[in-house]
Image (cartoon, rainbow, N blue to C red; front, top):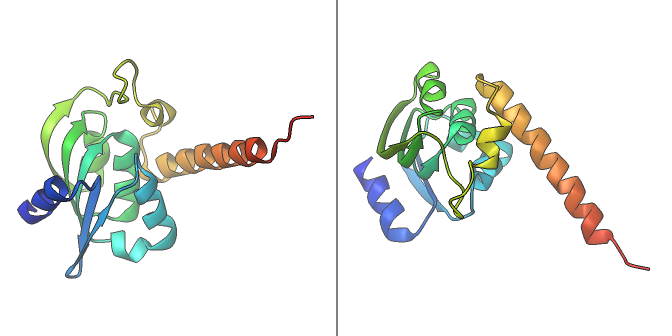
Length: 148
């Protein structure tokens, strides 16, 4: 895990995943890399060891759903802890916070709000997928919008 934490710090990555001797760095914001891994490479995530900059309840649900065995979070939300513990995921962290605050520092992370009333990883991932699908529909609509 120390090697992954060092790589997280030195590479500028937001997420580092190691499984079966392969270690990869990811750089997208938020949970987008976890979403991609769940959708495209679930076998790489399953049984992996992860170092992440921020783990809130939403990402904890995704990690649990993906079958991660251990996670380090530079910042860990206390709301994520029950999800990780219920899934049997070993965890460590640099800083524990009550909840994740968006970078502007004035509000809770919208994803933590979206999954606030869901406790099971399957339900968390389903709720997030609904949210992402809605966002994609809205993006396509706005992208295709042509003023008269």
